[in-house]
Length: 123
Length: 107
Image 1 (cartoon, rainbow over the protein chains, first blue to last red):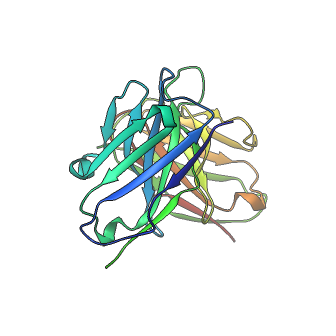
Image 2: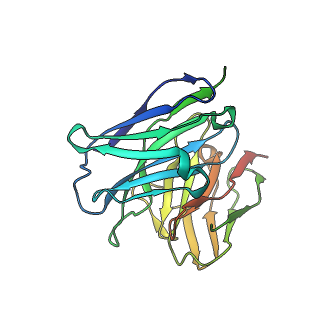
Image 3: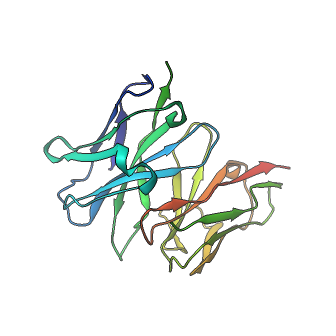
């Protein structure tokens, strides 16, 4: 079955760079139409989509954070990495990774999610 | 960006009630709309995709409808396990966007 799990630092200082890793199993990022997204949720607030990477290495970012985000994949390791530069206290949130398959025949939303990892930005 | 607006923001209901949550998009998203349920401290769980398709394993009391810019999530008979926050999300065009959420509380 498909599982995902986020990992990374819990506490980062303002201006530092955050690196988060999503380690997954049960699918391959080499499979056509498969992708992994990063989504975050500040405490008590709504979900916000951040970035997405497809099986063919196509990438997309939310425009408001595009200059600070980089998403990459390590296909052989079944990992997707999100890098966010110049962290600020407003970036304090739970960060999730999620699986998506762009298919007309089945679920094409975020159908599997990791449990999330909490990131606090504070000096 | 496509803005997703949910109403109401909070809903107080009793077990057994029929509940309807509305999601409006600022421009057409066709039927590329999903609904998620989230409980405190947990990751969201997909309930509905393609506006009206029920995810496998989700109880049939959940249903989705709509297309274009107006969508609804209906719970026909609210159960104790359904008290949670619900989000709609469009995946028609980048950036993908979520609604602000609807919290379903016990009346």
